[in-house]
Image 1: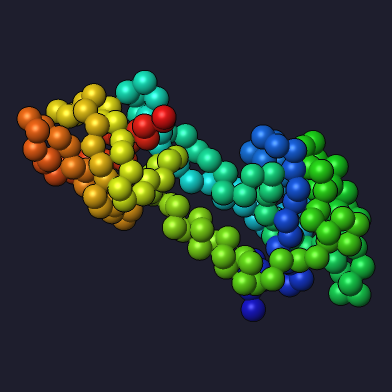
Image 2 (image 1 turned 90 degrees about the vertical axis):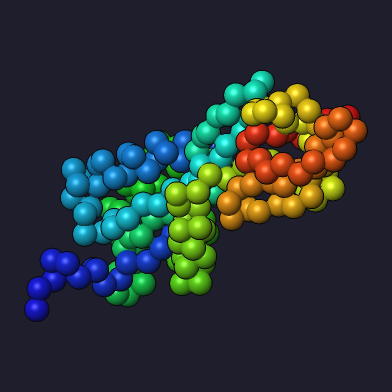
Length: 192
């Protein structure tokens, strides 16, 4: 039986609390130095769940990556031995990583339940390949159009299609309401 592709027994998922804005550095550091520290068998995976968010400012569409769980990184690792005692080397390596505040659970970290891991993975899968608008809209809301043939006009949202990222908006043209379909990023909320 080959063990090279099998998952080492005894690994569990844990949540790490990190300094705000340090999540990416923590993930990169652990992934980069786990081999040097001979912890490949103890640390399997480091997750930093993100989504792509789009926003319009001054008529320009921008996209950026937003963390789904700000201040947290998730790690699949062997932290306890078969007698349920903390294993010092991986414990101190992760705990002493710059940017890590500590394990959720403090000195006795509790592993995540499988349902929690499944939920995290589902959120990552749902966000994968999709652009999410930074602002969410509601039917009946008035918006200003920033892009396209109807730029600078205002309209009322009649329908929202989150799957396609589209809005159906009634725009008043020559005194009559005309329905137009626009993408989320082409409009902005009117602030009063």
